[in-house]
Amino acid sequence: MGQETSSMVSEDTRPDTLSDRSIAAVAELIRSGRARRIVVMTGAGISTAAGIPDFRSPKTGLYHNLARLNLPHPEAVFEVDFFRNDPRPFYVLAKELYPGNFHPTISHAFVALLAKRKLLRLLFTQNIDCLERAAGVPPELIVEAHGSFATQRCIDCKTPFPDAEMRQCVESASPPVCALPQEADLVIVIGTSLLVHPFAGLPRLARDSVPRLLFNMERVGDFGTRADDVICLGACDDGIRKLADELGWREELEKLWVGLVGEQEAERQRSRKKQEAVDDELDELVQGMEQKLELSEDHDSRDSDAIANAKTQEKKEGEKPTTAPNTPPTKKHQGGRKK
Image (cartoon, rainbow, N blue to C red):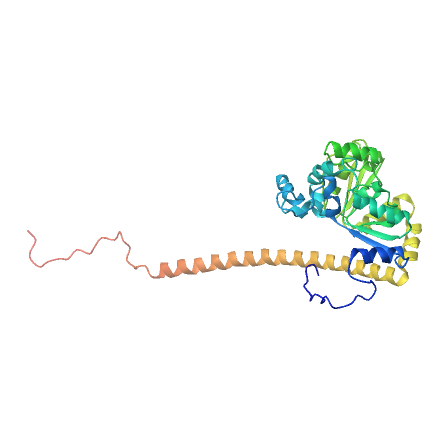
C-alpha cells in the first residue's frame, strides 16, 4: 500500500511485451495496434502546468496554502463530515479552482486524443478541476474518484443543483442551501437529533406559515418555536401509526409494510414492540415501588431515631440525684440549756 519498496529488475532482464524499456517501444506498441484498451490514471501533477497547485509541494502546494483557513488538518477541506459541520472552507477553495479559471495542459489533450482515436478504455482521475472534460474526453470515459465540479447535488436529498446558481455561490464563496424545504407546504421530521449541519438547518428553511411535524423521542432543533409546529414524542412507528389512523390509511399502511418486510419480520417487530411496552410498564412499577420503599424506609428511620432519642433521654433522667436541688440541709442541734 502506498510507498512499498521492491527489488529493481536488472538491466539484463528482457521485457515480456515491449521490445525494450523505452518510450519508443511504448509508441510502437500503440502504433502496431496491440494496445487498444488504454486505461489512464491522473493526479494533481497533470494540472500544475495549468497553474493549479498540487497538494504536497512545499510552499506552493495546496495543503500549505490551506493553512490560512484554520482547518484542524489540511485534508479536512475534502472530508464530508467536516463539510457538514462547516462547508465554508471548501467554497473558499472552490472559488480558486472552479472550471473556467484554468485551461487544459498538453497532457490533458493527449488523453483526449487517445479517446478520439478510440484507444482510451477509461480515465481514472483524482482531480476535481474538470480539465479532462474541457480537453474533450467524453464524460462516460471518466471516473472522477474524488468528484468534480461538473455536476453537483445536495449531499442529503441528492437533488441536482443548477450549474448557473452553483457558479454564483462559488464566485461569492458562499455555500448554497437545499431549496426543497422552501418549496414545501408540510415538513415532517422523523427520528433525528438535528445536531449535524447543514442537515440540521433544513427544517428552519421552511416558510414560517408551513406546518412542521416532528416524530422523535425528544424535542430537537427549533421545533416548538413556530405556531404550526406539531411535536409527537415517543417511538417513531407509534407516531406514524397515529398519523395513519387519522388519515384513514392504517390498514393500507400495514398491508404495504407486511408486503415489504414479510409477515415473520412484521410479527417479530410487533412482538418486540409489545415486549418493550411491557418492559416500560414494569420499569414504571419498579420505580414506583422503589419510591414508596424509600419513603417507608425514611419514615422508619425517623421513628427509630425518635425512639433512640427517647431512650437516651430516659437514661439520662435515671442517672440524676434523688435529692431535690432546692431542699435546705438539715440543722444540727447541739446540747445545752436554752438561754
